[in-house]
Amino acid sequence: MKNIFLKKDSTEIINRINDLKTDSTAVWGSMSVAQMLAHCNVTYEMVYDNIHPKPNGFMRFILKSFIKNGVVNEKPYPKNSRTAPQFIVKGDRDFELEKNRLISYILQTQEFGEKEFEGKESLSFGKLTAKEWNNMFAKHLDHHLTQFGV
Image 1: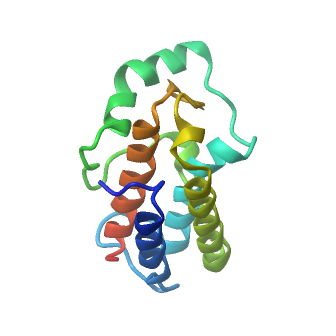
Image 2 (image 1 turned 180 degrees about the vertical axis):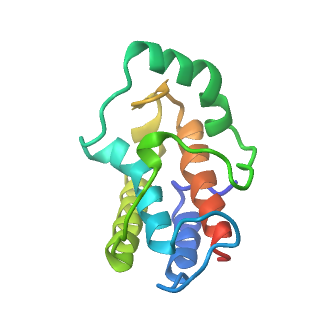
């Protein structure tokens, strides 16, 4: 598992993102490459931007009890796995805009470092360790970059 907080690993992920082209096609799934980048940005929007509502108490209980471990562990996501409604991206997106936003979020996360994320609260899962944050960020990015062959 890559460590998003290490410059070497975040640079490697950014290089993979830079290998994407506007006409890159998915090996599986139905998203366009621009939609996939926008989809990956949602994870970071939930951390840095106040644009996604916090789930209600019941939904948070369900997410923490049944979904959290699969998201924050080191086991890769299966192909064509379902996603939460707020991560579904419809319509056309601007490839360059979404790519640049994602790279900016990755750089910001790497610069803040593990200390900033240790015990930081997730909208959906409550407080996470820096390792859980890393696993969530890194494996989601790896899943979708692999989906697009980079």
